[in-house]
Structures are given as C-alpha cells and as structure tokens.
Length: 269
Image (cartoon, rainbow, N blue to C red):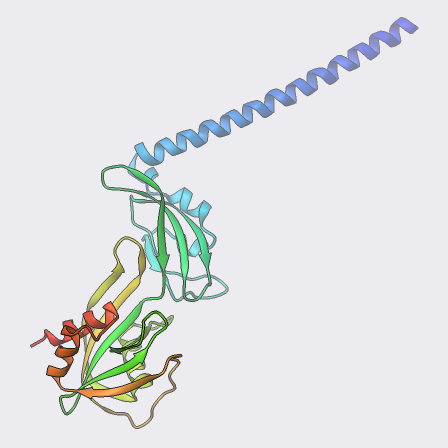
C-alpha cells in the first residue's frame, strides 16, 4: 500500500513538473514570436512594399485620437466625438510611418512626434511636429483708397507693431468666411471684394498650420459691428499706400505673416 501511494505521488509530481515546464516553454515561444514580428514589422516599414511602409498600422496604434490619424487622405481636418479641433492633422503618404501625441490643449496647440521616412529612404524617428489652427491675414483698403492697419502689442513681440487684420479659422468655417468675420470684428467694416492671395504653410518642416492671405477692397463702415475676442490693446490706423510701403521697408511690421500679406497685396496691380 505504501509503495502504491509513493508511485501515485511520484506520478503526480512529475505531471506538475511537466506542466510547469510546458508553460515556461510556451511563454518563451510567445515572447520570441512577438519580438520576431516586431523586427519583421520594422523591416517592412523601412524596406518592404510601399503599402506597408505608409504607416497605416503604426499610426492607428500610436494616435490618441483615431480621427487625427485617418490615413485615407493623410491630411484632413481633425475631429473627435467629444470636440471638433481647430487644427488639422498632417500625414504624408509613404513618408509618415507613425505618430505619437506628446501634448495637446485640445484647442490651440498640439505637439507630436512623427516617425518619418525621407525621400532617400532614411528613417527619422523623432521628427517633432506642431499643429495650430489655420489662420487668416487680410490687408484692407477702403472705398477712399486708404489702407486700414492695426497698431498693436502682442505677447511675443517687444513694443508695438503695425499689423493686418487676422485670426484663426473656426471649425466649419471657410478661410474667406473667417476673413470677412475678422474684418467685421476687428475694424467694424464690410468689403465689396475679398481676393485670395494664396495658402501658405507657416513652417515647412515643423507645421504650425496654414496661413490664408487676403486683400479686401471697397470696404466701408458696417451698419452693425461685432464683438472682438482680441486680448491685446490695438488702434485702427488709416494710411496711404506709400506709407504702408515705408512701414514694410523700415521694419515696423514685426510679424512675418503680417509683412508677407501686406507685400502680397501691395504687389497686385
């Protein structure tokens, strides 16, 4: 009887040992397979076919909000179920491999780290990218032929600068609608014609949204104004064309987008 009990115990103990060893082997196999898949995935992202190198899987895995990583068009207006963002999301086909959000205030600023493949096949793993809302700038000329500028202070500028009317494009709003709204809000005017001067990337390698420049002319005082949301003090000034050119050449326009919009408008015949 004692011998039978000993044999039963030995058999049961061996079964436990075999089971434990099996679990260990299974764990090692799964871990090895996972590492192998990661290595293969990294190889395919950089050396494999273009459809695998475009970052579809990685982008969806890394993105906090899937809407900002919709790679169907690689560039679309960002949105989520809870809130529609003011800014866009930039993804470049066959070059954006993955995106990781570093910080976002969900309104005016988002910092991302992109993994980017350059045109020569080199992969840069920490390409810092910044999204801010698209913006408009507009130089205004009234019905008398005078140009309407703002003299104002800004947090990022020492002292005062001459400026054009400008602001962010709101969700669901076109750039030209934003320009007309800002004209009414900031100087209380309506314009007979608002001409586009083009769309421009603010920083070609780091993002910072797009600038839409406009030239508004035939402008006159509106019957009803609108409230402005500007935080800094500003004064409206009316100048002749020659005076605006002098301001540009003397360095009295201290923000690049303002200066560019003025120059583009003044170059028109």
